[in-house]
Image (cartoon, rainbow, N blue to C red):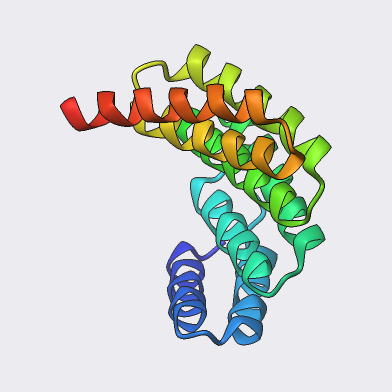
Length: 163
């Protein structure tokens, strides 16, 4: 594994992604992953994350879900809790975006429980998780759940603001 080459590919893929050249970026993300053999490696996790975001921008929800599920599992194996939480959150978002509201709801509730257990002082992360839950409940027509989730999102957002 040549970490320098892989990082260079990742940076180039990111630049292409940010300029809207998603298909070209995808090819470089995949090339970088091909060169990595350690899935618990933080660089591998970041490349998978980038590829997942790239797939989402292209509307390839199944590809994005696969990346976020794999990234979450690899982060879990590496005991990289912050990355695992981010991958889980992205999985919730992409599941909502693909209109699988029932699965998104389950994943969202799981994310909130996991965040409260693993990162209870990450008020920004909890606010984002509750906000995403509120979006899902609103789209599902579960207004009482929506109201509760949006209040929790606001509560944690205020805690973030106060520091």
